[in-house]
Length: 282
Image (cartoon, rainbow, N blue to C red; front, side):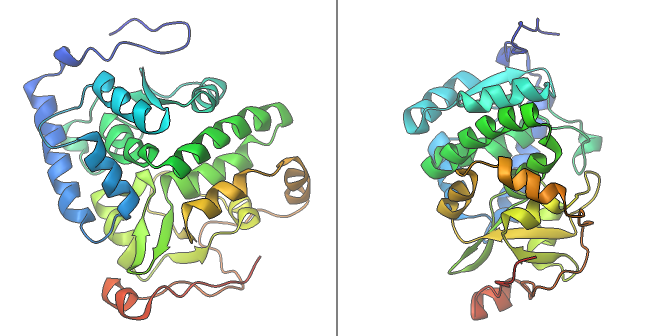
């Protein structure tokens, strides 16, 4: 086990990965490349290509960081696993993305209770090549430190969950995925776009912060942004008044009916008709 520094970082120790661990990366990578064709947003695909992340094996963090830093000023910080909230937010605020180093076993290909290197590097890091999304992530880190001081972290955590982890974006070609939790999941990358059961709602900050979520199953609701500029703009105001306002309102359960239309139809219908998203607010 690598020694953990005071700031919770460790050395990735890339030479220590086994042939089996690289083979699992290759299996996951090739499977997701097939699943994401026509489903992932173009910003994610451009980031993946720009980083040179490929099927050959688990990437070396230093090489990725050098590319990422030139593009948007971010670097990858290797960590042993989930880190304390204040450490996580401080990393983001300094444009450092904390990534785990271990990779799941073959019997965990479809579900893992905590993020591994495939989720973090394949799912998260390519989006940090996009300048607007990179700024959003830094703003989120700064907001997280403030939410900790104000005691409103659970509401801000919902914003991360429904955007960074499980967000969808409307494009001229139809709905596309940008959330890392979907991008790194073979099953949810299809379910999130094509299954008729979940609600797909227009992004609204108040609605998102009031909506609970599941951590051990596919989502019952997804929130759809128009573009990343909209997402970044939503994080710029001072959230303190919003926290006080929302504190007076009840939480919304995952998938609970709301007075809003949802985006419907499969991939073919979305390409033909375009996304249909409610403009109603809750």
